[in-house]
Image (tube, rainbow over all chains, first blue to last red; front, top):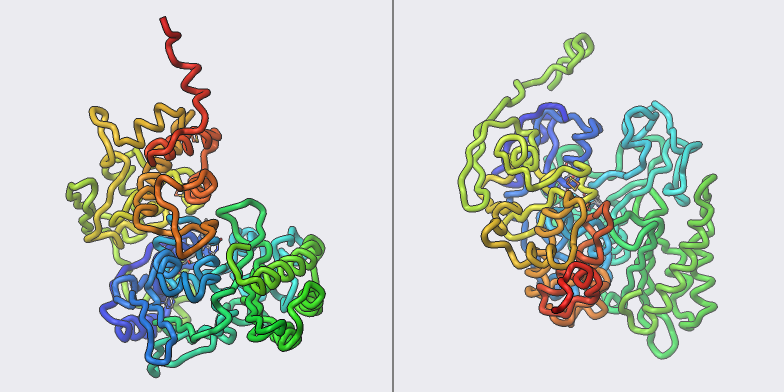
Length: 331
Length: 207
Ligand SMILES: Cc1cc2nc3c(=O)[nH]c(=O)nc-3n(C[C@H](O)[C@H](O)[C@H](O)COP(=O)(O)OP(=O)(O)OC[C@H]3O[C@@H](n4cnc5c(N)ncnc54)[C@H](O)[C@@H]3O)c2cc1C
Ligand code: FES
Ligand code: FES
């Protein structure tokens, strides 16, 4: 780690003002991702602005029935909140399937959104990486790329977003509340992260210096049956090869409110609107879900080492929808 | 703002303000107050081991991937290798040294011994701190990824072996003492430990 100065922000406004005035600064919340990146010299800020003592630790029900989760709430506290367990179980399960209890205790909602890729070529400064060093090349494209993207990648970058929580939030139509130089604004979750294109150094559409203050979950009648299914190289404490956040509400035999987001396959949590509209009104049956899974992966462009991800994702989607149609639970 | 010409010429980028050097930081560890002069970049693990001689917490990976550095902060288990010490001011830190003593072992320490929950012992302080937190979490009704019903949580008596393994997955044991570790947690949870094999081998034959 290089040396840096340390300050504690006194309010969200103070944090944003400091970040804008001091462009070599970075926010630190739980530190579970940033400290790791600092150790690997991926980030070299001259100042850390500690935002962990700003409050923003409440989970509240809003008048319209949505739930507002403060950006500094720990991942553990979100997963164990009674309303989230009951009404958005896939969010609890997505969080609990990620990292370890030690990390989830410290990791914050805001930090989870802005954790960076675990691509080994990004982490190793001996390799070329357009994300770490724009225009330096991408060693992963012709390297060991079994962990990498099969959807929405570019010539410049094939990295995937590592978060589990964000996959559930994408499926749940969450909204990110941010505080920037010009006050507060809200960003739909699916527009928060971005595809790499020619500028993979940018993971999200958050403007420099802006602070995430909350994530809002709108009411969702299908969320109770929502499923999070995560597949990985070992049973626990590993990042996803493929993960699926899926839900359907079945009335009579007909499907409504289908939602599908995939993790481990793209530079952002991958929401599949085509699959959702295909499912609307269809009969909840095995063939329907099989077709849905095919539609979701139609645009897949696997790399030399990750063809397996296509069929793995398809089977996971089918399984997740099938269990959701039966009323939900563990996948 | 940076002066770009200056930045181009100097090997280390010019800064708009000098970097903070060592700073006085006061930490509360095992009911004692310690004041150290450290740079903001120093981790809690390095303060414990290198400054305070509290070498029970171990450095396995230094990247949050093994659990050897696990300590309790405000009652919750945390990796001290990913925690900046300066961010822990005002918090209550407990390390393995504060959990039990040689004269009076913590029940988990005793159970790890009785159940052969270790071989080389390197992961053990982290395993025991993690296990102590695990017991509290279960008492408070916290869920794990494999809890079947999120609205009906297991208690210590009904906590399954699979649950214990999932809840301890953030602590690796290179020696593979997992069976004994799980048995120790089961014993302290009030459950019958599953395999008495290790005990049988060391017990005195009956006269
Ligand atoms: C070994 C290991 C395994 C892991 N496994 C998983 C896994 O399986 N699944 C998974 O989802 N995650 C996993 N993680 C990642 C973990 O979830 C993240 O490290 C964590 O969520 C980051 O949160 P934090 O508060 O610690 O962020 P920090 O490290 O404090 O910050 C991360 C980034 O967010 C920025 N930031 C933080 N808060 C804000 C804010 N409010 N506004 C604007 N910017 C902000 C920081 O500047 C920084 O760039 C793993 C991590 C480790 C070390
Ligand atoms: S040393 Fe901290 S987790 Fe390995
Ligand atoms: S006892 Fe040797 S690493 Fe666990």
